Length: 270
Image (tube, rainbow, N blue to C red; front, side, top):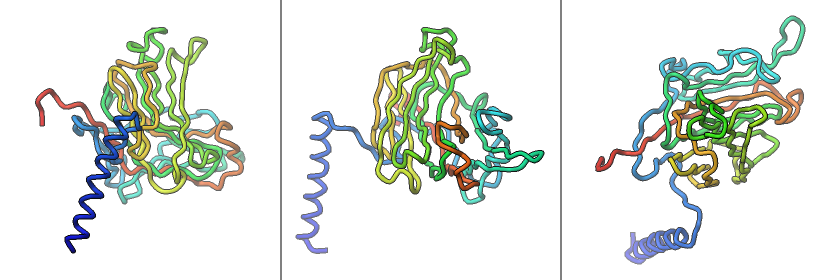
């Protein structure tokens, strides 16, 4: 390599670093490498979905049976033997009638934490009529009403359906699901989101939530900060909110490469 080329590259790298610092100083959106924990955090729990069967020490099944316009079954969530979790929606005939089947899995009772950084790498479904989600739930939702710190909140790190193409939704729900229910959300656009794998993350502290897509902070909010341990859910759900499932070419799947949770390091830890 020539000295001129080397010098040019060193200058470019230095300028890129300077520009990044200036951007942050002017209120620019923070960005970090996808798949990399925030500074000061270390890996506490993960699943890379190796092997041929879901690890029951890490995951259970959420809401088995009828839910919305489908039936959740265990068989719709499986490993492909190549390091991925595949959650599929399919159409089958039961007693001469069409039935849609899908799945939801959860870490409830196995891994529940408050705060930290959650991230999943996911390839999204392509057909309408169902939506994928990566979310956190407390066991105390809305109890008591008016005290989110104690009652917790539904934290939808991401929700996606194909009619949005490159759009994804971050949402918070709190104070239960009845007449006291409250929510807020932000829909963001990420070029190329509908194709290939993307990472979806949440940095959750006692003061705020910061949502990420592909390492870029897409929403920061201080609303409804839960102080409760919460568990993770990966799901596909069928419903008209996502379009007409009858138009979908099934089976269709969300494919998950990994899920990771990082916790803040103890003071002085390396």
